[in-house]
Image (cartoon, helix red, strand yellow):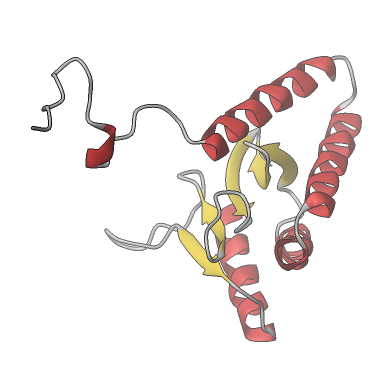
Length: 160
């Protein structure tokens, strides 16, 4: 006769999960590494810090699988053009764009958490409020010229 799991030992077969996934742990490690890099850059001029942060973002994009890399490169170009005052930075190992150090939007490749599409997400710092309900993330599989125009308009609005 099968035994019932005790209250002290959760039944792992019941779909319970305690702890973080490997992807979540990797994102947290990436964030800790980003914090160490930021601390190591103290004493540099603002321009030097921003240039170094952008190089980190470009290096991270270059490491991505091709399908995500193509999207990330386009998003990077769109954000830099639509909102040149946003500063590129890594955020949990993802390309992000910040105002005054606070992330406004970020790109998450499909590879990051093994999803079927990449996303462009906006934080609560983004000025996208539209009534009581509005989208804060967009699924990306490919980008047409119309998609790029939409993203450009969203980024401009988000940047304020």
